[in-house]
Length: 508
Image (cartoon, rainbow, N blue to C red):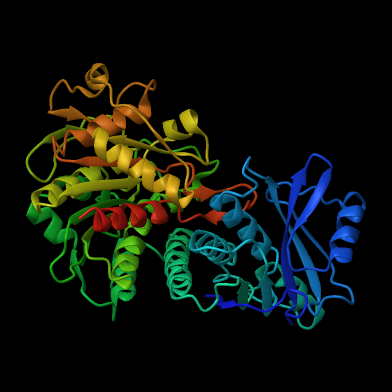
């Protein structure tokens, strides 16, 4: 991952391939946000803004020659939008601006960022945003079959992220600032790890190899233990959801438990992640158009794994156990059928009405197991329903569950800059998942589909403190990159889950 350091260098003197400076929208035009650049340079840049196409809008990035007054090679202007009424910028605004800039600096060896970074929150935001934007997934890119110019042309879209970043701040020697930057680096690495898993091709990432990836991620991380139940153990242990969903594939399901257990933990948190490594829909097969994005149906499990490892690396005084519910949903000859009745771990029965509503079935096994293990609170995260996107679009995730826990998740999301919106679980919708032959049906009517799925999950946690995070749209960006968010896997949920765990630590 990109190296990051704090530095007190003057922006005019820093020798880097790129110097990143912020711009803002004003009533008169554009302002360059810097108190260290020469006044005449600021005046020149602001007067030339219209000709340069610079507006100061959020996510806007413009690169221009640095000129003789700067030691850097290129000046990068990244937009913050309008200032708040008190003249400052929100931390998420700084995070996005830093990330938007570093996304454009792929292939460079060095960059210096001179955005506002005069307190711990600003340093955290700028550092985190810069590192989140400095991401690329180039595993499958080659230099092409040609040589020389042809090879370089073939590889042009596979540039590595900027190698090193200096965050310019007067607090470069402040211990709290250093800790903030170190935390930001751990958080960004966790998000990158989740993105990498989501972006991995499904012929390489299937339940068994995902379990191997969990072991590799936890290797040499203190106080973390990984246990794996394979398909035979799941069947004999009564994990009917995972067994049923995975039986249509030649590659069997897994339940992976990743447990971080520090000495004398102040709280116990369970995180349950949906890990459908590829979702064809099963016999209720999906349309071909867009099915390739279903490699991302394990984004919840990826977020859980990354969160547990990050919590351990941060030495948080909270026990965090992740339950990765891994299966491949395929329409093989042994696949589950609509009208099948399966028995979830713990004994409840489910009538399968739609084999493409498989995520909630594997999650049921994980949720019952998590509640049984006696955690203070259980969170689950899943790319669960297309209805989430209908309700909230593809950038805002949903959270529902026990009122207090739901609100706690929302507060954690707000603190990190991730977009979550609280949704209800209306009692009157329970009839939508009523089965004529079993305890519950796995699918209901189209209307309120996201809430129906949430109510299904609630069946398996009872009154236990719990929240369900539906990240179906935000987990995979099949459009253009924006802010610090790349195309493909986004790593959404990692920062929110980690902030939730940190909140539990500070609450004790």
